[in-house]
Amino acid sequence: MEVVKERMAAEMAHIFLTDAPEMLPSARVGDNADYFAVLVARVRAGDEFAFEQIMLATQQRVVSIAWRMLGNQDDARDAAQDVYLRVFKYLRRFRAGEDFRAWIHRITINVCHDFARKKRVPGMAEIELVAEGPAFEIAHCGPDPEGLALHEQQLALVRRAVQLLPAKERAALVLRDLEGFSTEEVAQALGSRPVTVRSQVSSARAKIKTYCDRLLRKGGTSQ
Amino acid sequence: MRALNCKRAAGMMSLYVAGDLGGEPERKVAAHVAACDPCRRLARKFSESNRLLTEACRPPEFSAEFFSGIRESVLAEIKRDRMRSQPSRFRPRWLYATAFAAVVIASAVMLQHFRSITRQPPPSNVAVAPPVEIQTTSGQVAGTNSAPSGLSSNLPQSPRNLPRNLPRTLNVLQPRRVQSQKNLALATGRSGSRHFETVRKPGVSVTTPAARSERTETAPAEQSATSAATNASPRVTTPKSAAFPGSASSVSGRAFASQVSRIEIQTADPNIRIIWLGPRASLQSDEINHDQDQHENGSRR
Image (cartoon, rainbow over all chains, first blue to last red; front, side, top):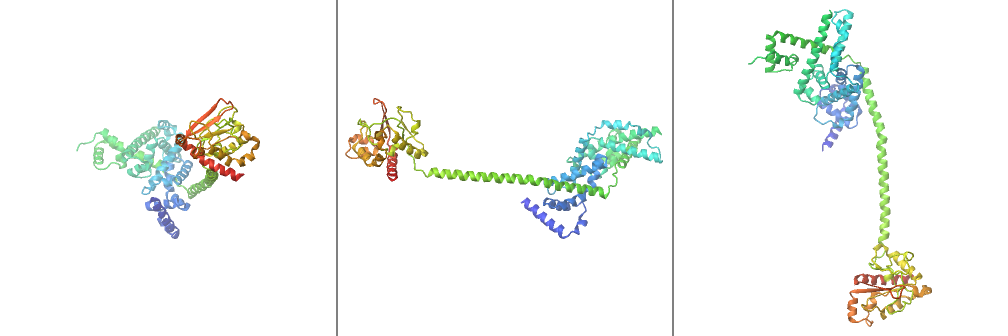
């Protein structure tokens, strides 16, 4: 019965989207659950164009999360490709009624975890070593070009500190503070409870704040 | 309302700064921060670190080529996967089709073989394996080489396999051996110096006149064919002969004969004779086979 319904939905979506292609730009909202449901049904029916529409609607967010999780553009591109290959592979497991964006964000987080594991990113202890680097001795030097370059280096070290957070705390921090999702949305994307997400985000913020305190203190003492 | 201390306020400060607290806890922390200078500085530090974090983790502007490259590579990889998966899908289908065809052919062969077996006549359940010389109970060698096939058709083994001068007994045969046993009986009749006779008459192992007359009725064709081995063919007297009126058997003997059949096998040693008493049911089927074989032998001649 459910298979018949999905097939009918796919056929209707195919008729709708092929007969009215002018509807696509207006439908490319990305936040509409029905829009994704239609596209998913079409992809299940074998429509590659629908899958490209899914990529167009979600690529900005996926690449942004991947870049924030991994810290560089090349890894973000590779991770995004892996994300969409997984989405295509496991699209049949996607249950109707589920939030497609949360589902694809969870895949993105998992792919980034796998990438970080392959790169053997060290643990949180290295934040201390990063903070002890010589760059902080000359930070906050002012608006001159040399100071701006140093400031950029300082931001890079903050990004490095984010990557050195524990995986779950980093994912919660990225989604909640950097991507702007609500706590409930983050919990849905990570498959955990809002209380857990709140605790993880609080811990990550505290660690980043400690790191920044040390960074600013050293920059201040160098002045 | 109980005021927060600095330790509890510091624990909730990151959530307060980001706006994750709501309701009563947020109001408590706000009241505490307004009144506590160290906690106000702590809140300022959290705000500064959040600003620095947001600034540090602001993603660059990705070009359209960057995104199109991702899409194209993904779609190309999907197509490659489909191309790779097509031969692997075909291979099992081909294997399944071949296996199915093999099963069908094997089933047809086995069905044909089964039908050929079931066309053969129904077997008797008594067989006599007389690799020994058999004489009639009257002391005469069963003279003709006729092999009334009622019992001789039930010979269980090939004559080649039968050791000479050793008595053999009756065997209950498996149903599907009938045809080969009939052939073996004929072969034994030609080659043999062996005779056997069955008499349903109890007590006295005498070939009845009816049996003799039956032999003379059924044997001639076979006699002419195997005249060279006159006294070598197995001799069988069917139980039917004992029931004929006017035979030498007594009334009580008839009654007993109606229940029991007797088969005597004379070995090479004249002092050794094997007597086998069998149930009538088996011999009734022997009668049927005997009649059938007589008919077949006659028509074959």
